Image 1 (cartoon, rainbow, N blue to C red):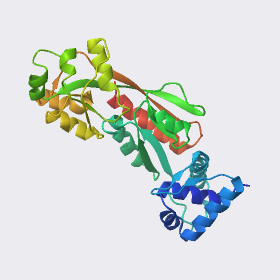
Image 2: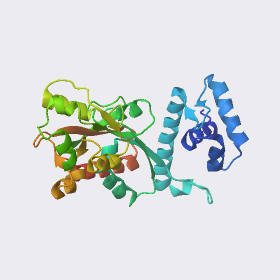
Image 3: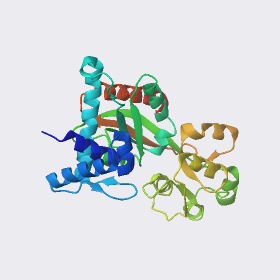
Image 4: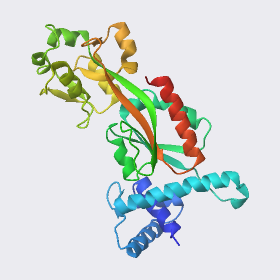
Length: 298
């Protein structure tokens, strides 16, 4: 029989980031949390939590946390169907669905899915941000229940649903274009014109430049790990970058931004992968995501 109070303590420490906050969340003392975690670690012969600021789960700890998330989902659905199972005065709490999403989806179409879902659900959402090429790793590690990803092939134990394509355009301010691309968008010009990148995983600018010039280029780079800051940096003439077309459409129409090479877009196929766990609340989230993608993606 699994020691669920100890498993709940591990999950709470990882979720809250510290033993003290986990104790408050579970309404027990920090020493009780510490004792439960220690006893489970001794029983398994493995470290489950890396102590720090914040505390993080080890690989084994993540698997246990994933199990507790799934148990929580199943229990909430059972309580909804059979409310008499819940003792009077018991705080059943709210289930939290942890999902991984790329920043551009979160900044464009995905928020509509969350708005639709939370309007009718008591469940809470915990969003982890990562590049669309890497969100699938969150699924593989068991850290999330679902993810928006560029990978169509289902992760083991997951289903994959095609969502559509997010269209990107290379844009810059008119002043930036005059300064760096007055003679056209050439390899020599791109080697001098600073581009914008979200983080080290962001390869969109390099892919677009390779398509235009048919070879790899070394491009000077500004780093802006924020979707809105990315747009603002282009508007203020700091650099050029690949922005979601839907996010900069008004700026293009007003002339505040211009497309560097008309007709040369990049489209990124997106998929929604989610655990095969048969839980209605996760199915309802999936429906909301698919509906929002149909409205917001190509």
